[in-house]
Length: 244
Image (cartoon, rainbow, N blue to C red):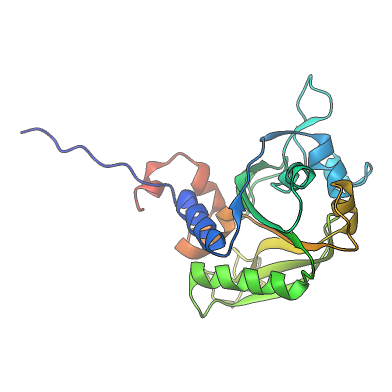
């Protein structure tokens, strides 16, 4: 008797990316893509990151040996400048893709991970639009009873900036090693697009405003599926993906 072949499984990261993308597309977003090996110009310069900013140092960025001013992109925000140079507002885009950070790994950090960038630019865009968009897709992903908190954050390419946390999946807010005893896990940074970023792309910042957000997909997947260590997603262990 012929042995039945085992079917393959979709990776949980792919599940989460597809689910978020579908929700945002239903809200009028279009998909935009960009290269993983990126120029310093698009990864830093057009995003209002000063030449002396710490994120350009080796501890955060993988620089490409032998290629001047080329890096492995540290955020999907690098696609913002590329897109805005060739499109006029209003527009809404989502940018799924892998990013790289030259940093130590632990249960909630890895040197490579996925983001799904969101960018909205047009007239009359406010922080309320950002909050409404984020709350809508997080409720779609986790259910109507999802608990989040918005707190001030700093990113050179947004002003004001915010960081969004969700209640820790493991301890339900009581405090544990996964959330560093805080009860919360940071899932994304966001904010209103800095006027300098708009102007660098040739967009009139007095007429147009925008917001951007960039959640780490692995963090979202950890919360959705109860995965305790972010490194499981890239381990290659089939026992992880075979559950899905």
